[in-house]
Length: 220
Length: 220
Image 1 (spheres, helix red, strand yellow):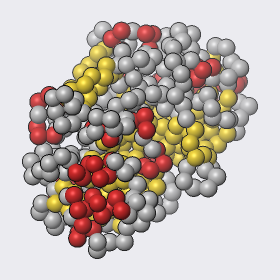
Image 2 (cartoon, rainbow over the protein chains, first blue to last red; image 1 turned 180 degrees about the vertical axis):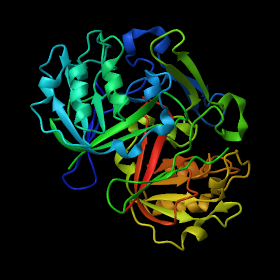
Image 3 (tube, each protein chain N blue to C red; image 1 turned 180 degrees about the horizontal axis):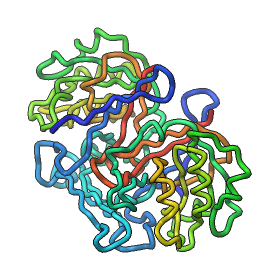
């Protein structure tokens, strides 16, 4: 599948807007290629039998680009009702880890100046594939503890998960248990390392564990 | 249903962010209360049988706050692939028509200074109800022609439709056929008349006639 990422020029002079969201379709990659996670878009009404065309979507809430809420990994965890919209509007920093082969750890992150309230976006080889990668690059526990201690607003990844092969989901817990948002399924291939304004707006769904989102980066 | 609108203070001093999106749930109002348009959120996995909690959503793409694309009313009309993201980021003007009982027309709009590239948001009695209103306030054909001639970017309404009782959907056509976005299902009850920055980010779904969206207004 061709990567349908487009960089567009905003109305303001010298401002670029990057759309870093996955394109949702019946063919979009899903976690571990599980059939029950496949998207289904179906036509409810067309011009054969009506004066309007309408369709429906059925999808797992972890489809494409999405926010995880604490309920995803903790029985008593908070839901989308506690989503903090301010955390998802503001300063973002894209870190280019395209050379890494397995995971991002504390020692990789220490090379950068990451500020309190930043939204940290991890650009990896994951952005190069529109097929699910079983061994996707992930953020390990040491990296999540390091970022939590910096009191950032959130972490974004271009994998469909932010961790794998860690018993008990410690990366999710270190972040979510400390009010740090997790944003999964980004497309960062065309975005240079650097600082941006983040606009991450998830659907407003009541009481759920994840929210599909549209996400842009604006150059400053 | 209680209106779950929240006004929140942004991080920047003196900046207010209004979330003007409907809350999606199994109970959300749907157009004409049609059963086939009801939202269904279902649990795919919980802590009884798995280490993560996950759910799915099935919904008509015209659920809650959403963008209509030309295919909705025109067989050869363009789809979400032509969505213009720049049109949905920028200057917005909220016009308070809460005193009107039936529709907004050209003569109502002429009282205001509306600029080229504005996104015009119509605040009406529709924002007061969380139940579907059969006789919802709409934008009549004269109003749509007036706004089209002003070369605005888009029109937003707090009804689930932008028009009713007009044969052939002329309001949709005057706007969509001229590249003007239609944004339906807003919640404007708490937003004072005036000028704002619009942040309207719809889900990125391929090739469809409508896009569910999250929408904020930021004070300037």
